[in-house]
Amino acid sequence: MTRSRHLAVAADPYPFELSPERCALLLIDLQRDFLEPGGFGEMLGNDTSLLLAAVEPTRRVLAKAREKGMLVIHTREGHRPDLSDCPPAKLTRGGKTFIGTEGAMGRILVRGQPGHDIVHQLYPIEGEPVIDKPGKGSFHATDLHQILLDRGIKTLIVCGVTLEVCVHTTVREANDRGYECVVLSDCVASYFPEFQRVGLEMIKAQGGIFGWVSDADKCIAAIA
Ligand code: TIU
Image (tube, rainbow, N blue to C red; front, top):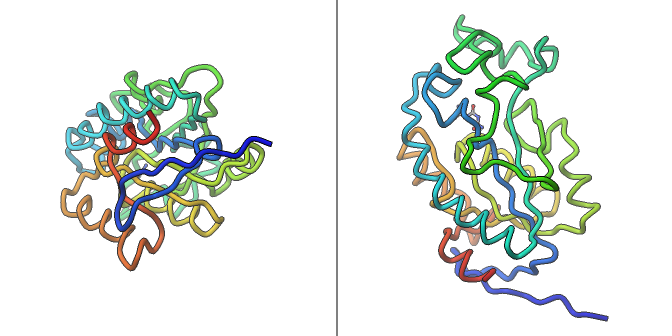
């Protein structure tokens, strides 16, 4: 019987031990609708350029994960064209509706539209599952948990946007389902610098209450 190797990843609040065969790289919602002007993020009043900082570090981690044969999973937030999976509570906020309306990259947050697609730098390749999710969490109303169970995955290396919304929701969901999560600080981004700082603090506080925080270089050094 082969014993699985354990790699030490420098992380806060203490080093993280990961077994590469039981680890997946999870890239959350790195979609044009959030990262580029004219999409959902900008319609909500945000400066999308703040999110671009996460792209290059994530690209480097993705390249290393692919080189090492690690499972890579992408998620996309979005809805059916008829919006039947978009709850009214999400559709209209303060009398304003953006989801499903026409924008510069097609209908906002609708599957199959240009804005719903993943940015070209991080585009999925054959064999990498893409999870379409209607909510903020990647486990809600998706088959992500089943895919991870079938592959024996225990640990998630997490990148994506936005930190305090879909990344936090997913990491909390994952933690409650028994997964260990390592969030890479430079591979996640927020429209609000303060939320980026505090969002990372919240994950690793209290002895790592629902995860670890590391960064792209430390992760690459560990899995290399
Ligand atoms: N608005 C915002 O910060 N985020 C989202 O709506 N979705 C994700 O975080 N993916």
